[in-house]
Image 1 (spheres, rainbow, N blue to C red):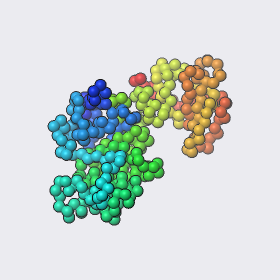
Image 2 (spheres, helix red, strand yellow):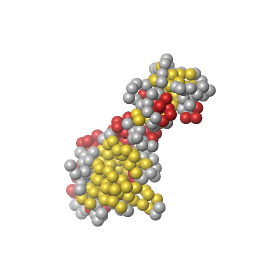
Image 3 (cartoon, rainbow, N blue to C red):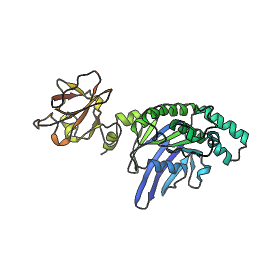
Amino acid sequence: MTPAVEFQSVSRHFGTVKAVDRVDLAIAEGAFFAMLGPSGSGKTTCLRLISGFEMPSAGTVRIFGEDMGAVPPNRRHVNTVFQDYALFPHMSVRDNVGYGLMVRGVDRRARRAKAEEMLALVKLDGFGDRKPAQLSGGQRQRVALARALVNEPRVLLLDEPLGALDLKLREAMQDELKSLQQRLGITFVFVTHDQGEALSMADRVAVFNEGRVAQVGTPAEIYERPATRFVADFVGSSNVLPPEITAAVGGPRAWASLRPEAIRIASEGRLRGIVTGARYLGAGTRIEVSAGALPRTPGYLPQDEGGIAVLVPAGRAVPAVGSEVALDWDEGALHLMEGA
């Protein structure tokens, strides 16, 4: 099946800065696809390459199999929702939503009907006469969504669209966006630096680092089987174990990741150390375990390798700071990484 969006060895350089560097990527039609990475990793530039606001320095961007090299932004089957919403403050909500139809020459009656349909879709029935300043942040976000959807794009691009919302509203909008995408069945390409958003909303995730794709996979694959130390550390703050520690617990001499929630406090374990800190998180307590003053013998954490984070579930006894503990985990919890 032809991908909705495809990058073939795509680069975008600004002088000596390689914002995007030889990216290969295929996004399936109807997918909710997240581009995840820190600021400056290349994800937003990739979004702009899809929309046509940037052109590649090298390589090819295809949308539904068509080379976009000579296609201007207004002729691509895509639309974009921005973090700042970019609504016209002097226009009503209805006119903001219908603006794209007006540009296309659609008559006023049809424009109004379609705008009302889109407002109903995003649960803003009856808000058409209001101005953007009269809306909450979540409501303005819905207006921006309705305006982007009114022209019926085949691909919807979302550039950090929830970044300006508070935590509670952001979580509610995550659920609404996912539900909306499933109802519409169109391709969503979502850019975020928030790994929780990407893992909870997307069907597939591309993790970006320094202009390149470090890993592409399902949320579970990215979280449970990171390909590199960067992915393991960025997505979920895994314990990244150096080859010496991996070998000390019976594995090969290789870098490995070990999630804090996979580790348990035990009477006997693969590693021993001293609790150096604890932080209550509600659903559990995150403790840090390091070597402290323990002797450097097999099975103890070397002092210069830093600590290991352990998530103690709510309701379990939390060891005191300064106490010695043994750490253990099930077979398969230690994930070996091929890349550095």
